[in-house]
Length: 173
Image (cartoon, rainbow, N blue to C red; front, side, top):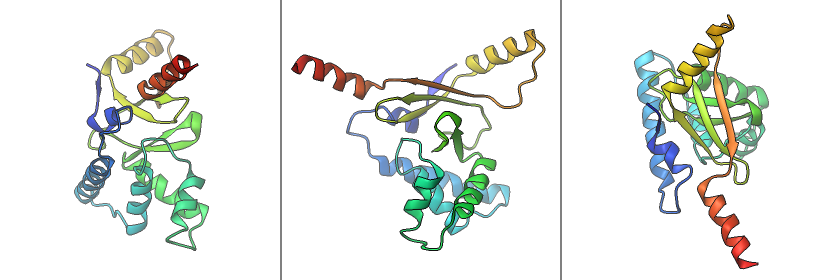
């Protein structure tokens, strides 16, 4: 069945959301997952992950580089891309191809295909986990003999906050 994780639901929530909790949970999850897998979550990788999670909006590698250079002046694009490659390989972030940007994974402990709702106005993204979508893609691909190697579903639209803002703007006219 489909579900929206607590962190993902917060992407489209009202202003009462404490984003610090999302970031803290993501960092704890990352440390636990990396320790269990025997891989190193270095200080740099950890900081890149924290920067990805600093907003519910996807962020590009050069946006990350700009922020990272405030702390690590010698950071270069390869530095960021290597950290992102590690985080992707561990399932801690997802790449949103249409935006060439990255978001934190809402459920990094379980391997899964990414399904994203992306607000075209504010840029917030929410990750879904709906097995029915995955099954429908698999069935459709199998019917035409297609072998799915990677599946990421990206849906653009308008989030509730932006819809409300649009409605308020049209009422104010």
